[in-house]
Image 1 (cartoon, rainbow, N blue to C red):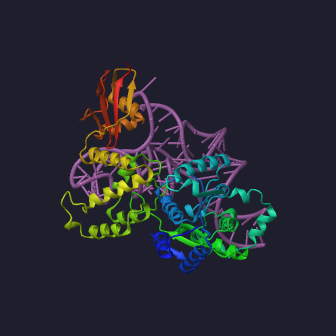
Image 2 (image 1 turned 180 degrees about the horizontal axis):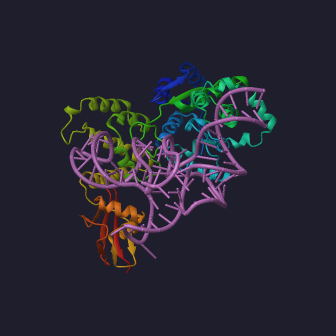
Image 3 (image 1 turned 90 degrees about the vertical axis):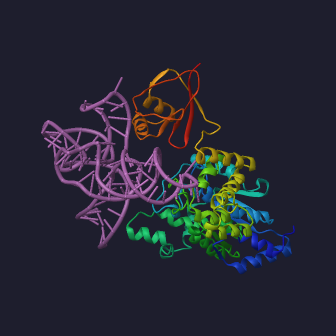
Length: 413
RNA sequence: GGAGGGGUUCCCGAGUGGCUAAAGGGGGCAGACUGUAAAUCUGUUGGCGACGCCUUCGGAGGUUCGAAUCCUCCCCCCUCCA
């Protein structure tokens, strides 16, 4: 096996990395692997706690891909066992335990989504149940001996919760040890994670030393802000772009990010050449110099380029084009989208609120509210009052609910 | 084991017998505005056969004309002492 030269590798691998412990160790490992022809084993662990993954997860997954690009072994570790405990980092309270079935269900979805980025054939997919399921209680104690409560309380979310009087379960204390043990079991050279993972990642180094292995290099990528522009992208905040979102949604959601996140998104979520990204960054600092509508460095144009690149990552370039068309049409020109779901109803006459409730799948009270707030249009004309009677026919009519929901309606033939 | 504090609507959190579908904030949704699905401002935010009715304040009973608010039992969480 031969690899690109060290500098090329480093440039690719270090893109967007916030912290690395330690860079010299990584260089040493790369040099050694070039000499021996043996690729590095790079691990990314994910707990399948939710049904689908979003771009926040993709930051580290793309980092794993960067190693894969350079010829190293990408290990995608599914924390089927640890997911049942819950990593404490995600939120500052104990997490609800998942059943084995839920975990497996999620894990399957994760794989499908992750392989939109990673090369499936070159990825080593593992589950940590492989080594944790067969462990006895004595084995577990042996692991527990290797750390102390004081050590665990160094981690600031534990410390915070402890001081606040929020619950911390014993299993949560075990969590970093388990994640660390994953690295021992897999003999990892490198482990990836977000900056919030630092404690757990370092636990891997400690344990590897205790088990007589060379400690892994840990690489941390920044956490990415979600659509609200301030909070970390996460499922609970509902400020995320999902990998499985439609091209239209990915495009639109990307367009809704704050301008000052554009460079960060480019760096962490696309492989657009870094010099190009910097050029965009410079232009965004001088917005008034790029006000001509057709200027490719107009903030709008830059953001569209970003949105296209991101859509293309998970779909393809023609989908990116579709997403852009949709955005220009629906959001910018306020026209109807080219595709709208068709709803067929049995009766011909409905009070407006019932029609809206039926089509939009909302309660009738909600439908009344939408109409009185002027949020519903029938064939482009605002419906004035909730109780107005609407007559349908076999001819399609369009109904717009809010800015984003469009439907074609007609009676059943 | 002992003593004390607490579980409220999507979330945080006020409310300690009727004026409470329940303050306030966050989030969501809608409208205006905009290069934008951003920011900002405004409105709205349980349901229904809608000037009334039904469901909701950890669970189950009870007191009362009337309970999120009082009583009993149970479940869960936290703190301190041991």
